[in-house]
Image (cartoon, rainbow, N blue to C red; front, side, top):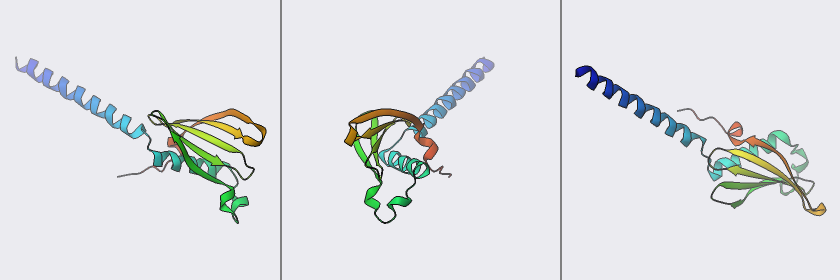
Length: 124
């Protein structure tokens, strides 16, 4: 009887620790609006030459757009007048990019990134 009780107790503890680990992992993959903006900002600074905007910062910027239940929209404006719309999934950080050129009425998918790849890793 002791073995059965001990086995049952240990099994319950193991299941509880597994569920706690899944909860922590789910919480760390979720994205806030601030994280979405920070990640897009870092991505854009890595991928685009911002030196052309040194004298006129309004030429290039990123800003928050609309928000839905499932995603944030972050908008990057290039010095050329084109835009990249980043649709950041709130649950997992997967981000799809859409290039928009208003002057030519062009809108096309241009790729995906994981926003977590562009966020600071915080320790402790």
